[in-house]
Amino acid sequence: MRAIRGLVALTAVVFSLAFVPQVSQAQALPAGLVVDSSFQIDFLFGQQTFGRQTRTGPEDISGILVGDILENLRLDLTTRLPVAEGMVELGSYRSLSVRLRGAGTFLESDSWTTVGKGPDTALEFTARLRPEMRAWEAAGLYHVSWGGPYRFSLVGGYREEYWKFLRQESGFGGEAMDYRHTSRAPLIGLQTSMSFPWWKAKMEVIGSPFMTKLVYFYAKNPNHFMHVDGTWRDGGLLEVALDGSVFVSPSVTLGLSFRYCHEELRGEVRGERSYTRDEVWPYDYYSVQNLAYVGFIAGVIF
Image 1 (cartoon, helix red, strand yellow):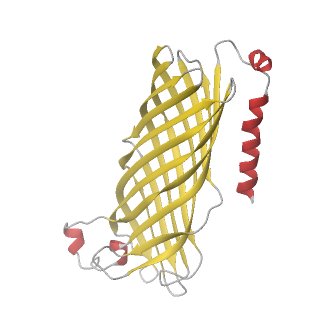
Image 2: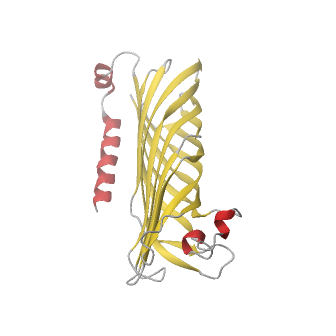
């Protein structure tokens, strides 16, 4: 209910801007300053994988690690969720702009997850986990070229994204499972946009080779528990975003948006189990995330 109330409140604020008189807008903003705000509802779908890397080094034949579940654990997470997103870009079309963006899932429901010990073992089953995502981004845009309705910009910023997959019913030989990860990424990229009397469009490509990812996995039953956690810095992301809108009034637009993000990182985790509480062996793990966002966008420019 809290997520629904927040979504309704944000929708009311964004759409109320469409009815602010143009005279009041001109008096409130300095000359040359433009505020481009938008609110969108997306449908997110894709796949996330978390598991042990396939290795043939000495650590894989050390005896104590062979056959260990931490060595072979793999999660395949299928994600389908509605997402609410708000964005405000403040600046001058001919020099610099600052962009703030926030997003979060709502009306979350359980999704199927495949849990196994790798492709070469029969120990595999499906479980239902409830996913949740929150993200925010701050970025600056330097407009290197402006010609007529076209604008070309350099983008630099920072993004943080948090995911949680939680289950509180019997499974994995037990009762609970909890997988969380937080991505922190400085961003660089390019954007091209165009604005005509009746429509506007934008395309942006951003990436980050300097990401940090914090991962945590925990599972338990009445007799045993296990967990792994780690901080990774080897990997990055690449994202492509497009949107197009038509003007339904001089300051209000409605349109469609699409965004695809590929993220891949790897690193060490350390684990602990109920029958070896001092377990601190490092394990080489990886995560791959391929997510697409398709949705409707409403914008207000003043």
